[in-house]
Image (cartoon, rainbow, N blue to C red; front, side, top):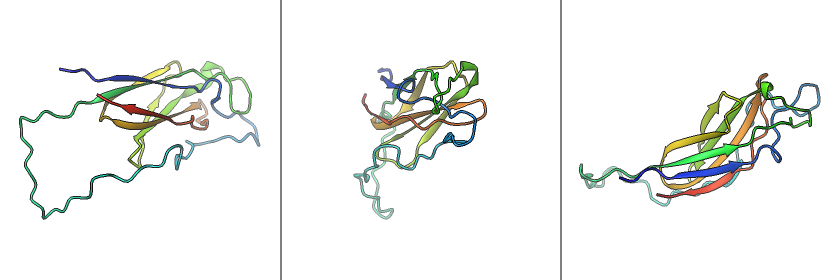
Amino acid sequence: MNTPLKLILALGIASTLVACGGSGEGSGLIAEKPPVENPGTQPTEPSDPIADPTDPVDPVSPTEPSPQKVSASVEWMIPTTRENGADLPLGEIGGYVIIYRRTDQLTYTEVEINDQTITEYVIENLDAGEYEFLITAYDTDNLFSSYSDPIIAQLTI
């Protein structure tokens, strides 16, 4: 039996994405999770037409194996600087939020990591396909950084 494929996606949030706004007025802080309306690629239309419920459907054979699943390992660097340029001590980082989706879908799945020392998270049980991954950091005051640039990856079996 095959084991799930592990793909490592590096999201560079140490140099290009500096986490969390600082305190003070006019610093462009984000006090809630940044919106994710169009962080990366636009979804494509599904290639299969919607099935007509009156059409006969071939029954699925109970001996047919279920599709294999893949895994994606998302890695990042712990940020040391806030978006306003101020230092960001490790103790002020509250955690991270990873969002991901298949590029042919509109909605994201969110994973929150509440441990500021974690720098890798494995997302398991994914169907093969093209995925988009983004990450944001937040501080202990629940102020969020902007999302990272999207990483697009083709996950295959």
